[in-house]
Length: 280
Image 1 (cartoon, rainbow, N blue to C red):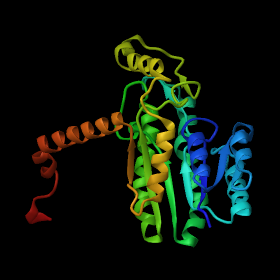
Image 2 (spheres, rainbow, N blue to C red; image 1 turned 135 degrees about the horizontal axis):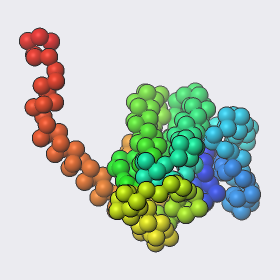
Image 3 (cartoon, helix red, strand yellow; image 1 turned 180 degrees about the vertical axis):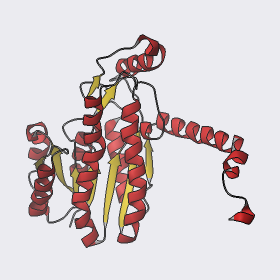
Image 4 (cartoon, rainbow, N blue to C red; image 1 turned 90 degrees about the vertical axis):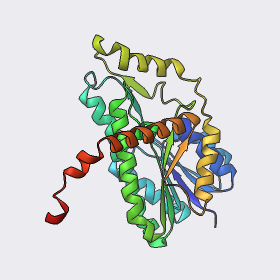
């Protein structure tokens, strides 16, 4: 039997392209979106192997109904891709709490809720892959997207812990960490803070302007990203973190260098915080 994929956030971007690539590769897929009309064309192209699922990841009843709908159609779930997410632009001080909390509900708590609903299925069958779409912004912080970074850092840490809990059960976890891709993330999917503080114009303001101006011109190809995700699932040993895009690789390597520099420079102070060896 072909593997069954459950992909959230399929109306645009990574989710949409991944759903099409997964189905074209011969897999079965539950294609989830808040509005199933947005994925109607995908499902109609694969009537036997695709299922449109209505899903707002912040709604517990919709998560439960979606999982049950998938079980009724396909009996199981082999691959979960937590892709649903939004962006938000604003310096930390400028950011509105209601917008930040909404983003956390979608990007982190929604992801965690969907995962929790699917885990019993994967535990029972002692197999499965979970792909959590984060960002290079889940490893490296940038001005203007500090709270977005926070949601993705949360996804990264959550996924690392989850991977250690479920590995003995045959379940594999991969964090997807893209850099700039030609999706709608920097377009209509991301709001701006209403407050603008002039003191941040050269940091958060400049980076916000750069990202917005770069939308649609990013080097990352969502179709190639989708193929990379499929390759990871098909691998015997998928990575815990899959970076996508040259900028993501450069950013991650630079972060490692900065961490190493701080660790080495402050090594004596770090070790000195312990009790002396003879008192431990």
